[in-house]
Image (cartoon, rainbow, N blue to C red; front, top):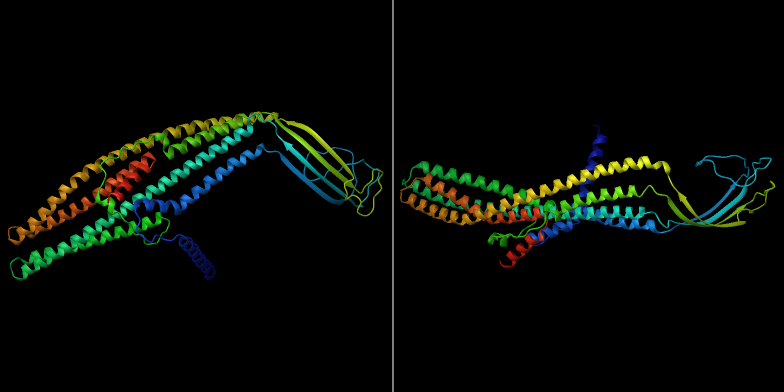
Length: 471
């Protein structure tokens, strides 16, 4: 790569970075810690995918209005001034766009002299009836609008669900860091105590080495937990639409308690994914209806008023000056025009066959979507049931682990147990503390999974609001 090309590449990277930075800076990070519902609202207001989907929905809505304008009459205005020769010839030309048309008699001679000509007119055209063709096109636009709205709902559901899951994952990572920090503190106290006993020659030196190894292992676990926390923070801020920003969360109400019931049930057909598949099916049916209404005559009621002027006389003489720029002759006309493309039937027939095949394919996709959503709901229900049962057992595990750790320390101090027993008790306590903290968050995540499977987050958010209010 040459120096010039390298400079261009770096310049492009710098400009791209500035563009990204300016786009990111347009959304300010929240100043206060976010609750789960606030995080979802923030993401729905700022995440690019939501904004893009909203604009597509607005465009499809305007598409319906556009399709309805075909019912309005069409009015064309014309004014033309030109200077040209007046030579005409008898004969016929097939329709084309190269040779300009000319009116008037065929003269015996030709001339290269130019004369002024002018024309002005207005043409009003309206299709009084169309055998349902325009209405079918409006139905296509409506089906497109319904599909775009369903896609918007699904995008909002996906973004809100992803943010909720990232929020709970970040809360879980923070709890793991707290548990790891507490474990490091306990092992630090234990190592200090063991080294004091070793120094007094009340315990063998191997116990001190074992305590140091356990402390180092606890610090490594803390570092790994902090790494997971930082990665979770990055994912969370990305889903909020403010990548690179530091965002604090408030999950205290969710950690304090976990609801033990989630009875909300929504029909699978109401899920946005099912609505998208259904809207796509109706859009295909609407296009097929348009084709069915296409093989009919087209009628246009037309009215015209026009005027012409020319500097050339019928006897071959020429006017002088600006003659021909004024409108010397005027005409009006009213009529009904009917057009019918007889040979379009074969192509329309095959187009309908294509749309019918597409309709059957969309019907199969719709049924497959319903099957997938039903299976997803069953998996979410199984995850929720398991999470509830686990959350009911973790307090027992935690209490037993705390008691076991206290007893192991006492036995070690009394020289009735080896250092290995204390280390194992510390490990069990860390596991119990972590699982107890995560159990409630796991229940909330399982409920979020059920809400996503049913396509409706409102019942889940109602439980979140109750937890916040009852904190």
